[in-house]
Length: 203
Length: 203
Image (cartoon, rainbow over all chains, first blue to last red):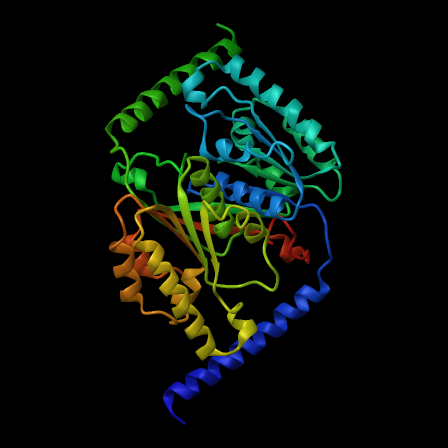
């Protein structure tokens, strides 16, 4: 048998085994339930992944809510874009800027608490299929919010509602509670080569 | 001095140092250039991050292109959503399904080559600000495409064009060429608990 034919056969055998495993997993998995996802780590992709899921959910006709716990220097591309769909997305930019920008702990705490009050409304609304809590981890890491209260509100949400939490330094208890957790590791970042944040990529 | 006042002062001093470092970095960074991003790893978030960047870029009015190298069992939420904007996004779903679904190496190679032909058109078009090559890494990993040709086409693209490549098992040479590389590590995934892929999250 030629080498390339052998390769084809090995490939086919491998893929048949893989298909059997995956088909079985899919058949046995429960149908639908609300997931809690936590996207952490230092790498690029946490918030953008959350906003990709927002687009996905909108593609399926779901109503969604967004709370951004940190406000950038300028309106971000995601804000400019998703605000075009007020009938499908409730979009809230609540923070006062990065903590090293505001330099006022009390103001940051007040902003975080206001953001959580809005988040809680979304977490109590059965019509909302997906809630994005962008950079909530930062607010929790700095102790701006009561972790126990946040965990309790997340657990009390409607059973079919998905929640995505982003930001570095996720609290252990939140990771514990979550269904899916990704740590985005930075292999390299353009910033290290002195390249400024780019529109459409970071902004 | 009270403990809480001390805490405030330490916080302020830390944030002032942080602000100085970041302000200097921003001042010294070049203004604009096209980035090559690679999003790999086993964790959840690779494709969704790419689609979040697509939304960002659209928010800034950029024209974009998408090539999906693997076609799912059904139309995904991202496809349903972004096809609503044909004037701003050229959306191509080219693959024949996951390799363990098709079980036909020659058909997979033909599909990957057709997908690359479409990708190359986008990579030669100056009007396109962002190109997403979703799951290209899978096609490269299985040897369905000529890596040298892919790298050459990426390097020959317009200097202001951003490209995002997703998929597990990125080739070393592609990582080398990229400006920003994230490895999405799976801390945990709902699938491990037997929960099926959910609309708006994975689909």
